[in-house]
Image 1 (tube, rainbow, N blue to C red):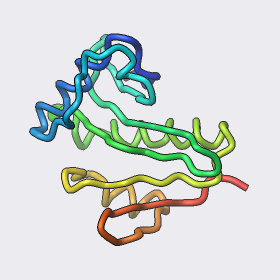
Image 2: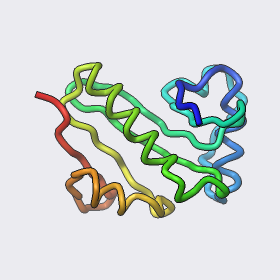
Image 3: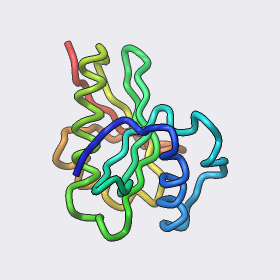
Image 4: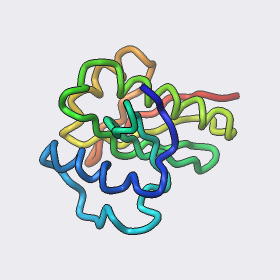
Length: 132
């Protein structure tokens, strides 16, 4: 498995992952530049997972995360989180925050094992300090 920044042309593959899950955000996944701010996990050039990542000092943000059904519970999402945190830390972010939607079936394990604090409200937000 390779984790890398999404490249031009990865947008449709990310959209396909969301469609497979039955929860596709309303956007044109073929639009040029749609892949900006995404990390992807791939195997043999096939995109198997994607994570939206943004750095806005002092906080880095993880948005949507989607993993192909056949690759769930294999550590792909956790590997994406680790790479995203490392990128944010190197960019100077002091905390990482993530907004969770109901379809995020894998999130509780990451909250439990990675030291996130849960901020409950109209939107579920988790965060943790990662820098000085």
